[in-house]
Length: 467
Image 1: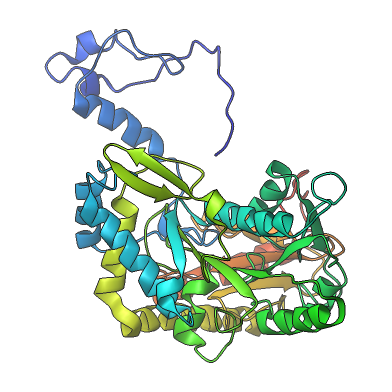
Image 2: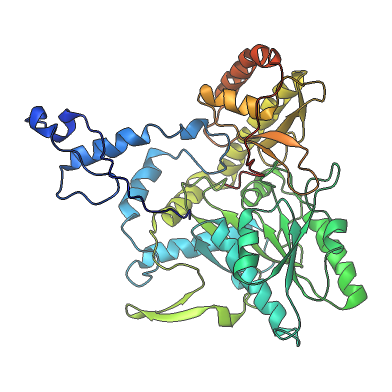
């Protein structure tokens, strides 16, 4: 979570007298709650609601947020279920046994979806999102490596191999758990990790390789099967076993439905663990993620805590403890509601919107596609070399004036010269909305082309939108 500083500011919340004084608006003008300390006394629930509601109007419209991968729409029935379960603490397995059972069923469904050779031997858990799931997977990789490495911790230093395009949580993991991050930089047209780049960074102290099924930068799949094959050859030559974790935060809920013949999951024996975000293309509001391990050998038993909590024995593997059961229940609802065919239809619709929208950008002489939305329903686009009057940051800024949130950013190490717009197409972003977006792009281009030069780029340019 973000870190925030306190404020010594004495400012008060500006209020409409009608809010605090339904019976006496004039008297209410003398009352205004402070912004940065607790008010002296209570107010009516309707007044508190209205004050918070009004301030939140300044947030962007989540449905027009093409930066986020996170689900922004669910059916009313799902909203009702979540409201019914928001007060249930997910960790209280004995008190809420049916919620725990729905979590177990979701793990089983994902094990089957990801082609586990023996779904019954898979172990898994829900998390608050893919970031926690990645931390847990990384901990398991490090513990397995340490158990087979005689020199640790005295001389051997663990490392984790991944592309420079990984989600920031992997860098956090390496910092928090003292693992050397070995980030393969981008090179030319290679904008994510491949087998050659991964192998060049591996040695006997590599705890694992992270392969991303759906880069946050542009939606492209990393070649998991090729990476595994290269590591098979490496093990045959050196005797060093290096497992693979697949960060399927987004692609783990796309590829099984739209790319069923693509081998990236537990069909590959070297894949030890997989994570996904239920709150991305799992079609659930934030925050819920999932982490699954091939078998108990992949998740060392000493990492699993067995707690006698509120009267029952409870095995748990998590970085947090208390959290609401609402998102897990909503995940089960979505699995039950849609089934395999329903998920395929929803994800195919998103991919069709993405590929159609990418083609519309390509038809404009000003833009060049980096990806086409034919893997994740996500694509990245940059300006052509001939465009000198404006850049992608100008486009992003001008679209924000129309209500669209379309991020612009540069790629990481060795390709910081490449700046792109990235468009994430999710359920709820329809073809009609895509046409409206392109209408706004087309209407802005004449003004942008008349600029003398691109406006100043922000001093600190984000290198990715990781959410």
